[in-house]
Length: 131
Image 1: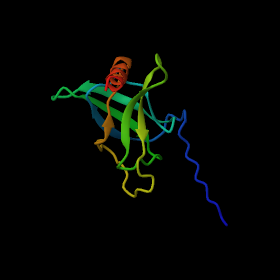
Image 2: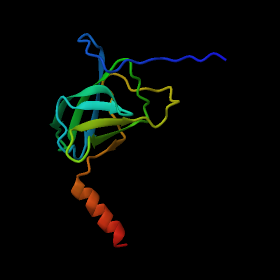
Image 3: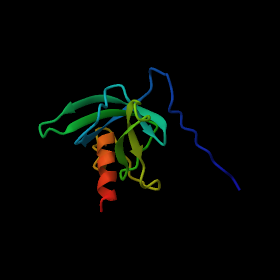
Image 4: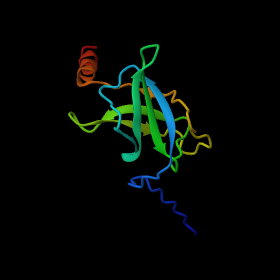
């Protein structure tokens, strides 16, 4: 039996690192700012490039992903944080790891999960507890 392992270098300080740009729109980004990380499975795969309101008052997030990282089209992107008071980051969650269709330069994520504040989470718990 032959086992093939492909190593992907993602945490590089190489200034010549190649990227491709992606976009996602959210109702709330909860303090996500330029320079925050983009992570998949807890590993940095890119960086936030721009955060702004579009004409529909949605938070548009533009980010760069290392060119050697292939993200399946069915993936979800969510706003996450490193603990209660930690930095925010964009978390990419691959839904179909066997996909043959991957995001490419300039694509937009369709599947997004908005930021939930502590207040939002507590409200949900209270609502569920009263049912």
